[in-house]
Length: 438
Image 1 (cartoon, one colour):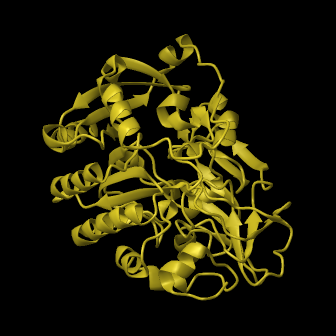
Image 2 (spheres, one colour):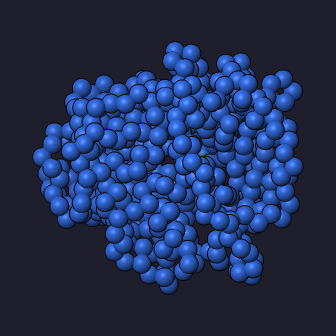
């Protein structure tokens, strides 16, 4: 056993023990408080278990079967999406849904029901899980799918690792011609303009996303850059050359956060006005298109030793311009904020999970340096706006929402609680349900 399980937000640590799961055939340890832990890319405390045990799943990294004719792959839950891509892309297959980093495990992608830039077309990750194998603490092995143990399947997708240990899963991949995407990017000057471009783009473009300048104020409030793309056809993919595989590394944690009002305003102004912000018929390799931050190893260190909070909410489309405007004004006035602010729309395709975050509307995500009560007060204000609008906050990104807020965001939480394994828990689950069990 060893201490481990730091979350990506690098907030002050907790005491917990990490037990690697070396084989999907081994029984679970006899521990009263367990939680699966993949690659630690959840931002808050949904991947923490203060005082308990984490079941390290990265050692569950074997492929069981892959059919290059159909794109169906059967694999263990600890395989990273990047490893999956390395295997399947040369055969013309790619994950149907991918989040903003390829360094997440398949089990983590299921447990958080991650989403990507194509939700309006493909829904969330769980929509492409054909079946999965779940190990419960009593030794029961359940083969779950939309037709077998369907209730447990729905609880496990987006279930934050609380229903048991996902040992393996079968996924349906997406056929692609190669590693390239063709698209364009354009500046927009307001939130109203963003929604107009998004509505027009979703008809013809599979992937759409926008970057927002969260430091802009006054008449520039809501400005940003809209990016859209489709997988490039075979003739383009054959002619293009892949970028180098080199990655930068943030070698140390600075004594204070490098993200402050001065650096934020300077970066955002330069980023918005840079010539490459406007591109026509651009050709992008999948890595910088889907995973821009993966090019910087340990980028989360730039927030300093106190770490950071990420806030991601989803808001109903009706009234979203007014709510987002209020949010951006508050963020701008606070002097807090992020270099990377993501705004995108969710489509109508329903998620399969009882606790899945994606739902029709628009989602905003950004990081805040941890400056104690000042940051928490801002997040509470954003929560109040999200609650009033009938939206929700993403559990995989959260480290501080109240129990009352969570229970309003996810009214099906009590039905979900009936599927929680008696020996599985997390710091997040105890916080949002008031449970004292460790």
